[in-house]
Amino acid sequence: MLAVAHGTASSPARATPPIVRNEHHAFDPDWIEVWWTLRQKCRGCHRPGTERHDLTSYAALLGGGPDGDMPVVIPGSPEESLLFEQVLWNHASTPDSPHPDMPSMPPDRMEWLSAGQLEAFERWIRNGARQYRRPPVAGCEPLLEIHFPSAKECAACHPRQYEQWSRSMHAYAQHSPVFEAFTLTMIERTGGTIGTFCTRCHTPIGVSLGETGSTRNVCRSRLSMEGITCVVCHRMAQPYYKSSGRIPVTPGQVDQGCLYGPFVDPVPVPGGHAAGGNEYLLKSEFCGSCHDVTSPQGVRLEEAFSEWQNSPAAKEGHTCQHCHMGPIQGVPIARLQRPWGKAAVVPGIDPASLPDRPLSDHTFAGPDYSLLPDTEFPHKLDWMYEQDYRDTARLSPHQRETLTRLRIRNRSQLERARFKRYELLRNAARLHVDHPDCASTGDRIRIRVDVESLFAGHNLPTGFTAERQVWVELAIIDPLGRLEIISGGLDRNGDLLDEHSHEVEAGHLHADHRLLNFQSKFVSLTAQGTERTVIIPVNRHLAPLNVIRPPTTPAQSFGRPPIFRVAKSSLPPLQTAGRTYHARMNCGPGRYTIRVRLNFRNLPPALFDKIGIPHLKHLLETVVIDEYAGHVEVK
Image 1 (spheres, rainbow, N blue to C red):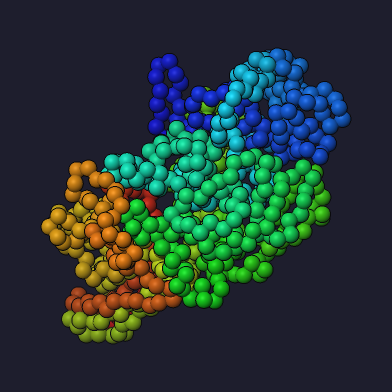
Image 2 (image 1 turned 90 degrees about the vertical axis):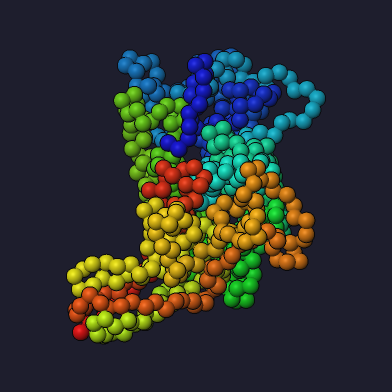
């Protein structure tokens, strides 16, 4: 686990996010746990307008059933409460337990209530089934995590979209240990003045709830850890033409506000939420709110949307959604040409009554992937928040079974995400290599390598281009099978042989001056008046305490701040760039093999060293986008 347990002798260690932050408020603490559990596991079927008891509000929970029968909760008496009777079961597999081996509800074995949840239900009912500790007094109700819907609530009617989103980098955004370490490093390097600049894109609801940029993931709520969750996008009623995040998320539970989609003719569903159409969801400007980032100093850290605005794809009417939400990642496919099906599957509603829609892929494939164990992402079981699942000797038979099923499910999800990522990268670029077919011993041959971008929508790479590496690796294998890397090799740390390699900086290795790398670099003006590239994007890297201040001159006049910039080296859309290499055939006659690879890596190992997570470098993966192998006959 990448989280760090903390606590004292009097309080149990917690290594997982709480449901709601541990702050003083007027709610009964057990009600929060009960309400969260009911919304996650029950309200999909127990909605108004159905034959089941309505569990979508506190009033309905304590009121009569649909036929005027007794309420499911009897305050002060959990043993007489039908709700507690339905969810109670022998969770610890205790011999001679009076409780059943399996509960009546919920039906999914993976969702059975954990020991802590059962205790919270019983304690809440026995203490009077109160919503508040005391009657509400003057003042507004505090805004808490329970006032926003979780993506898991949406899964009851939108299982396909939830499954795709759960393995996406939108769901992973705040979970990423690299992002957390990078954010903490930025806050330290800037004396805290950068605030929530990074986290407001990665956890918009967490920022709305007052979580700071330096709040550790183990202290964030579960809803905050959902990152870019469903309501971040589908609660946006009006266009939001701003960059660098700062997206406002309208609070309210599923049935307390309108949820917007791409369809202008929403179909009302009995007991469902209000729905509306918003064509802004279909535009690239929608994505640009978070995928165009300008630092407080005016540095253009990410320009994916700006690149699209000036791209051939924009001129042809292709949007971000055409490539990243279609059936084939990286290939523009119009919305009406996608597979059609049901956008919702509502329990208790005849599917034939719902129209067929063009389906969007909510995987949002990109260059990143999860570095977490397969027990932590995409899904995690409730009992795993209460017990160390690594100690298998202490697990009950139910826990061992569900843990195995969870791993199988997560591995399947991660494999699907990996397939989509590889599909995107395969459609990114193509190699073109030219060299002679024959030569004489000792000849110096010419090898021309060109990289052609197949993306029409943005540069290669894009996004946080100062960390994305796309480089050419050229190697020659002589007739004796010996490998000689001409360019594109790595040092012992796995870094390219450029100015960010420690071995090059220390003089142990020579810099690769022929390296063809499309990675952009952060460039800072030093105290000596010269520039140097840096890994961490802080404008003053020599001072012991750095503070991000607004520039004294308008960055718009120069296109960048005067002391810090991004040296952009990425390949423009549909463009070709390359390099000519020379190699001497001096190992005698025979067949020489020329091997060229176009490699991609989403993050460099040197970054992991700088932000304090070197133990994760072994999880970095180099993907071969394209490969060429040819031969030269030497006489």
